[in-house]
Length: 277
Image 1: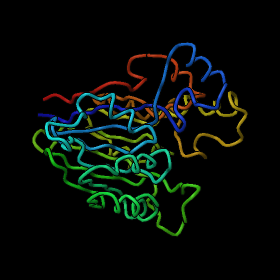
Image 2 (image 1 turned 135 degrees about the horizontal axis):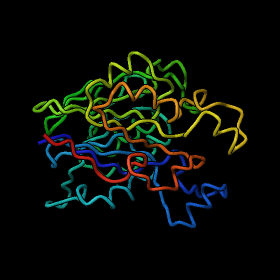
Image 3 (image 1 turned 120 degrees about the vertical axis):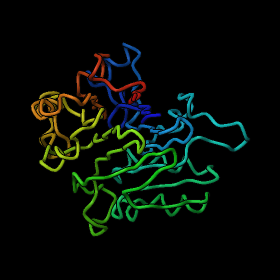
């Protein structure tokens, strides 16, 4: 067996195209018939028990589109066991409410994130909810480690909830040692993250922006990508050269990113990745 990774959505907040946006990127996406739902991933160690990495506002459509996540054989049986939250942002947590029909649900995150997300207490009124702090051991033979990579507080949240707001995850198959790293909200490439990535087979990294000038050049924004909590792809490439054995994919693509309307292999992140023995 191995770590199985199913990318459910590869766009930043609002998706591509965004419903109320007529920018060049969204217009091009509409013309090309491209529909990128918002950032979310499913992982499994045995193909039977699956865990979502974040729950986007598009989670219902994403679950219906993924055959491996369909319910059965029992009336309320589902392969979805729980959710691993990497941030408390609305784009990564709003889908929790769509999971309220679950008979049982596990939700993992840092203490900061679990205490900040207002939907979590609400969700506990609808399902048998189990909360757990990272790191965690998952059904199917997977172990999850987390690394705090950012301190950006969501607009709705109280900053006194803590400091561990944004995490990268390293998901390892206990039997083979194969590892998948997820870090689609990465404000900077630190020595700690470099060590965290070392030896991983596949990494899904922050692809929000292609380069540092993109927000100003394309959208007239004042803040830089790093000020918004995102390391541009161009800035990550030099660091990736130190990890030649790691296959790098990019997700969380913003509508300003020209890669959001292309299907270039190794850059876009739609489909499945199997870390084989």
